[in-house]
Amino acid sequence: MNLLIDIVPTVVGINGIEYEINSDFRTSILFELMMQDNELDDKEKIIQALNLYYPEIPEDINKAVDMLLWFYRGGKDITSNSKSAGKGKAGQIYSFDYDDDYIYSAFLDQYSIDLQDIEYLHWWKFKAMFKSLKEDNEIVKIMGYRAMDLSKIKDKEQKAHYKKMKELYKIPAKINKNEQEKLSDINRVLMGNGNVSSVL
Image 1 (tube, one colour):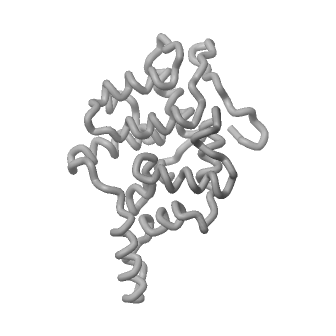
Image 2 (tube, rainbow, N blue to C red):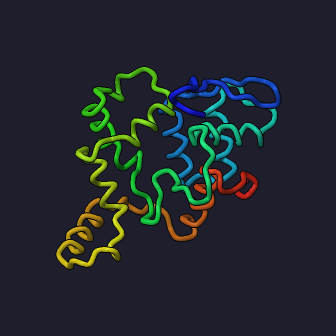
Image 3 (cartoon, rainbow, N blue to C red):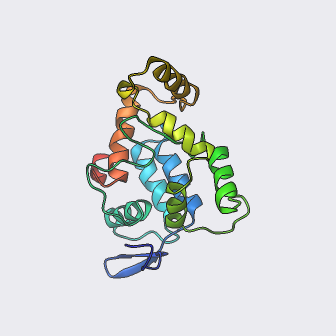
């Protein structure tokens, strides 16, 4: 899938049948937030994901889940070396929940898009715009602080500064270690590095 030459999809093919998929960016943001919700068990998440994405849920549930994950990932083949959404070596670097105001203002500033007022924006287009936000946007600066590898900074003053910034902008932890490990399994599935059966 190439955004420059292919039309972004609003349907997915499952066993020779085309099914409409809810392609607005809000659906996939809700999906990402839901997958990080430790109050829902894994089966509930799968059921809610199907209901979020499909106006009519396909009979082949496994394939339906595979296709909604494909859609969520932007139609890209994700390798094991790829960073997951909002994740990297430094951990989670953005949160649609915690950083909503920064992300909203960044889109308004850079693209003149009011995410409150816009009726529809395809998820893949939103993702492309989000990835391309300029460095002078506050959310990009904050993600940079969160992603900073302090072990690579030799200057003590710089290290102290970035340590302070990482702490200042740290995403509040809402889950315990066991739940974090389970979330990591779910993130691997979301990014194509695991299988659905491991979370069902």
